Image 1 (cartoon, rainbow, N blue to C red):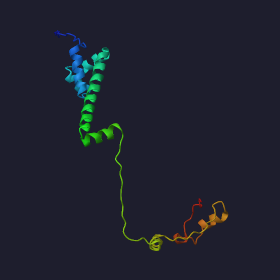
Image 2: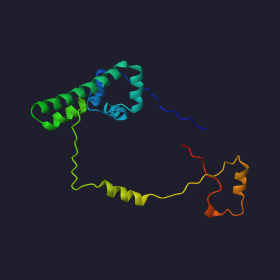
Image 3: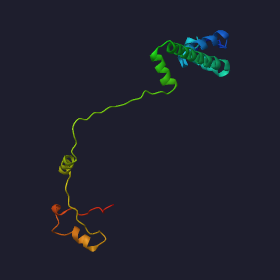
Length: 164
């Protein structure tokens, strides 16, 4: 059995000024997670470990995001001030919750006859006949259900009570 010696040198990742600047720049352009770590020159595992032990890493990321948002907002406001209506509309919609008024105009030509509408409705109504059936608690109800003269034409064996 042969034992192979593998060279192992633990890498020590430190929050240097250059590394914090790289994190800041990546966050400023909107990168997140693994993309931010890779752009800053770190593996995702190294970035998580560094962020866990160095609070300045989180601060550099937050500052980068804030500066990126400020730069985009400033650009949008400058465009709106220079007369860009689309930029102004986007500011109103997204920053101030503004919604354009919506209106719908419907024009109906012709007359509606109430009598004709009632006649059409009457043709669609199903006419039915309601008969009172004795309650099951009564002895006559059992006789009605079991009667020899009863068939499908004479009605159902049981009818639900009127609820209202």
